[in-house]
Length: 217
Image 1 (spheres, rainbow, N blue to C red):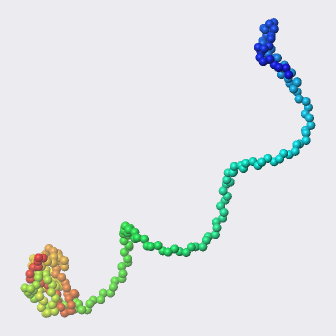
Image 2 (cartoon, rainbow, N blue to C red):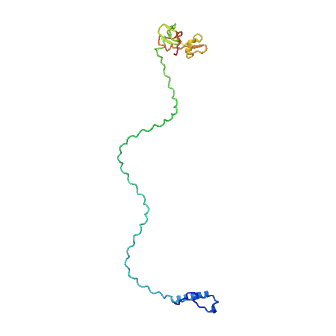
Image 3 (tube, one colour):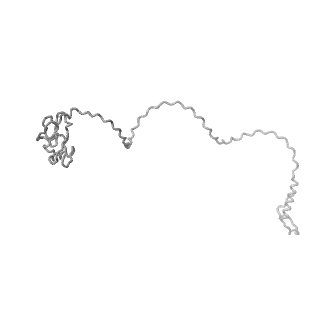
């Protein structure tokens, strides 16, 4: 193999050639040197393959590899059969009574029911027969004005309670007690109670017309 010059400075160039491009000449020399080396080092034809050598002994086992990642979870299996019911536990103690809730509003009033049939009126035979038969007498000093008395005598104490109309001008004190509660126009007349049908048989209700005037004290 021909050794190549170390650099372009090591090549002696005739002075007659100095006008040439030194670098172009240097590149030509290197190219020629490369071709010479290629020819000298060109390999010959490949020979036949030799027989395989004997198998060498098995090498030691390698280190255990890292554990691979876990596989995906499998599908859920079918539900098992229901087990038998356990025994009932003992009843716990009764809890404290809660606070009563607020009372709800009253519901609407229901519809009025139908009116029942009219009952049969049976008068009491103990009253209203042969009543008011006594004669009117003086009230006497021992009654209060407007007081009603019942007598079985033939003479009543005062005016009989038969519902008659009286003149206000003649009985102003009694009118102040009764007003027009039992009748009358309140201008010139007023009525006294009619108790004939309420009196027991054979008796007479009478009204005190000349007694003492009652006092609230």
